[in-house]
Amino acid sequence: MTIRLLPTDIDNYAADYTTPAMQPLPALTRETHIKTGMGQMLSGHVQGALLQMLSKMIKPKYILELGTFTGYSAICLAQGLAEGGSLHTIEADEELYDIAAKYFTEAGLREKIVQHTGKAAEVIPTIGVQFDLVFIDADKVNYVQYYEQVLPMVPPGGFILADNVLYEGEVVQPVEEQSKNAKAMHRFNRHVQQDVRVEHVLLPVRDGIMIVRKR
Image 1 (cartoon, rainbow, N blue to C red):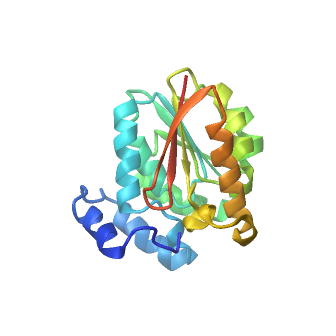
Image 2: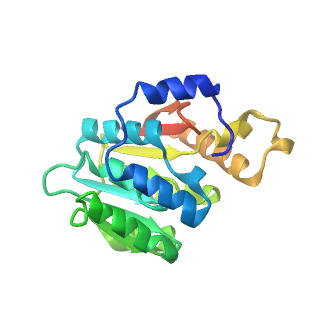
């Protein structure tokens, strides 16, 4: 996300009145900015705290994350894991594996997080676990496909979270002015809205998070 959807002072106020990021997230943030040049892809302080809070509320046994990046969101989500639970996270870029693994270890989560490298659509069927919580934050054009893949793996009462559903605010622009990713996000939002199998709410936090609960 490169465009702030809320005024900067409101964003800053929200951050000031949110529990500080746990260790080692500040160091992870710095290294991500330095080594990848794509720090805007991190969940960040407020969204990370929201993911952590939701996970603690749900207390999932198993979590699936599509799009590890450097591990920020996985560390946040793993905080709510039930006893003996685990988080499976999938990343297509194998060069990011070591950075994420390093911080999973520093966060004391090495034994709770299982890293997968490859295309999400191909890896998902190989895991063979029912997930109480799924976080979709991968390539935008395939969100509907991922959603349909994981929904049967989520039990009734389970949750799917989808990131970037406002796509820098482009989703409310005329269709001809939307980028390919914005069109994909609008298509995904409409798909969820029309799905009678779920109930959902779109939160305008950071770049937008869709919270979906399977009926």
